[in-house]
Image 1: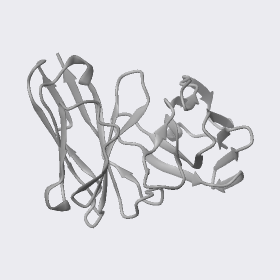
Image 2 (image 1 turned 180 degrees about the vertical axis):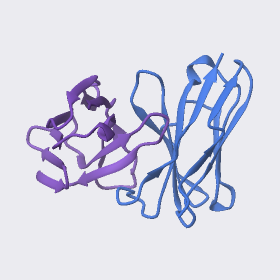
Image 3 (image 1 turned 90 degrees about the vertical axis):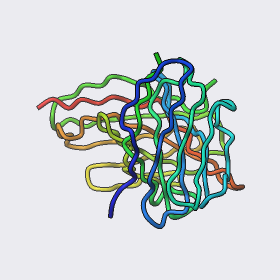
Image 4 (image 1 turned 90 degrees about the horizontal axis):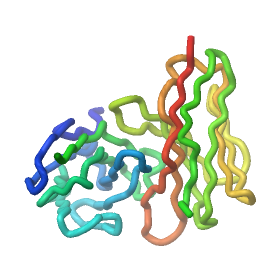
Length: 115
Length: 113
């Protein structure tokens, strides 16, 4: 079984530019989550999709962040315009069940650096 | 006050040592507790989960939860160099539709051969 795939693995952009991160969950997993780790801080929840619907987006920092999951398969997270404080590692995870703790599988993350 | 506190270490032990990793939490709504292991440049990988006070054992790993003290621990017996990683505690609250995990900062563990 293929795992959760994220790309790019690394992105360096200038402040004010736009970046789009992509996550391909495990096939058949309806639940998809985005998390972020800013340097020196803990991993924090951003949002949760069930199929193509946003179940919980309470962790999204501001309206510069837009997440989509068209067709309930892969998801994208767009940051526009990027700011310096957006730098960090963005993780995607997927699970079959909503609670997730039986099969909450993380991708390797996208390391975003805004300069 | 942070909801979950975890000493970031770093922690360095010799091979074969018993390792104790700990987290405290402030919100009694947390009912489900997990430990994740994260190798460098990889995503967190679930090691153990539990939802009741007491001990849960899986091979060399034992997870312990004390809900009255709001304290969770992970013990690693006979530690190996391959156990060198960052260990993250994580938890979520029961009820409702809120399934987001709240993580500790993680403890960086190095096991020296």
